[in-house]
Image 1 (cartoon, rainbow, N blue to C red):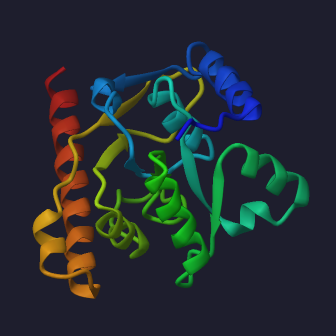
Image 2: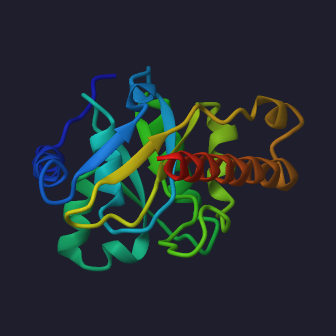
Image 3: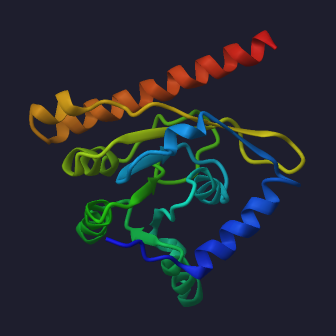
Length: 208
């Protein structure tokens, strides 16, 4: 299916590219891991309102779809703009089946879905409080689950480092049935992946 491209998305992405090349420089590590056939799910820790824009910059040549909390669409103008920027609104405190179906449909159409599994911004700790929907969606859709680690809260006039990891395996968990136990087991793999990445980054920084 041909990708339906949004002019608003490209305009925002172009502006973000300029900002992330000048006043808020962003450096991707192993970005080539995103140059793969879709569909897949991108997950990332969330510390700044511009994190979704950084995710969009990481994917070359494709427009991505974002999962966003429904409160962001409470204003009609904001809802109009975000929907045209490929946002799916979700009620993160309840099992939002409409949003889940929209996400599954997005992946079946061969697109890329961006999710922040913590559900909101967290400044203390990294990827410890995970909503259950990410694991459920991944195992139902059977697509690669690729982690991205944003090292720090995005800051002006500082180098901001973003690390792309290898897909998190979960076929063994799904083979035993998709349920609360297997979803929590995948959530723990996600946590452990980020613990390991954070430790590696800290070790590299220590050696500098």
